[in-house]
Image 1 (tube, protein in one colour):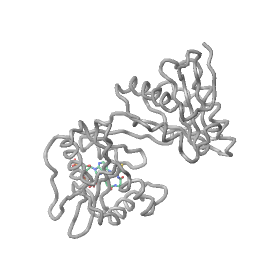
Image 2 (cartoon, rainbow, N blue to C red):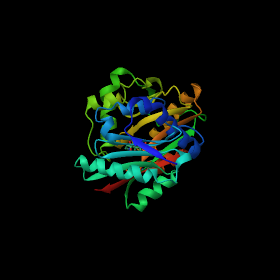
Image 3 (cartoon, rainbow, N blue to C red):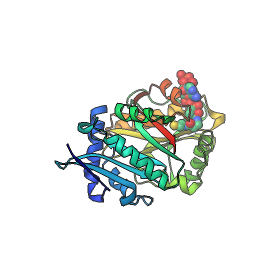
Image 4 (cartoon, rainbow, N blue to C red):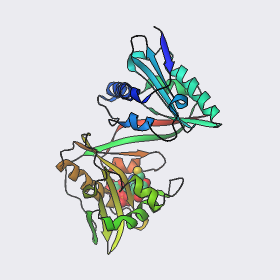
Length: 293
Ligand SMILES: CC(C)(COP(=O)(O)OP(=O)(O)OC[C@H]1O[C@@H](n2cnc3c(N)ncnc32)[C@H](O)[C@@H]1OP(=O)(O)O)[C@@H](O)C(=O)NCCC(=O)NCCS
């Protein structure tokens, strides 16, 4: 079969979204990527569609594969399950590396679903290094009410907590985050998001200080509750606060009709073992690969 390769246009977004959904359905029995995610990605300021994207079409009009390179440093390549094994991924990887070189980038990274055997094999055969692993964890939304140590209470996030929660989260994330996020940057990606869910974002209070917090998002199309950030102040760790905060968020998600509570964590945080002790299990994982150019 013949294929043609061309830059993507915004009109391709639904077909690209369907391609990704077909792969996720095959790997996980369900679609994970939020509706509209591809359209939003194609509109990102760093993307020039002609230069930074490619789609491959089959002669019957099927969108067989696509790729993009963001900022010259991050690539994403997806091949439709019906078209795996025809060299389309290799062709797009060659293109992505070339595009990154045009950006004068000296490395290129890609996050690949661990269920994507073809993609994983391709990157390994090209000598890509493993940088990190990300895990999507889930736990039930039923169970006993949170148990708190003496002197600690939980309540939902209130707007006046914003500065204190920023402080607790960033102090905790400083342990592994390459760069501290200032208040505005943190707020823009958490409490100012339209999906931020204050009611299911508990703070832990000891005396009159906030010593722990969970930031939850409400993703209306998803059957899952979703926690975006978990942090407990160093001097309060090991007392069950993370357990209590997550239980609070989980039971709240259950009352909203969600089926599980989910969150992503990565190998840099060292928190996987903790989440597993809390009864969370891995639903899926991805690996970040990187090569020098
Ligand atoms: C991860 C963090 C939230 C844990 O908070 P915490 O209040 O100390 O956790 P808890 O006391 O509720 O511990 C829950 C369970 O996990 C265990 N645990 C805690 N930290 C652990 C670790 N690093 N490794 C393995 N197990 C751990 C505890 O022993 C406890 O198990 P148990 O009840 O069977 O004894 C806290 O250490 C933190 O803020 N870290 C920095 C920020 C961070 O990495 N957040 C997660 C990003 S995804």
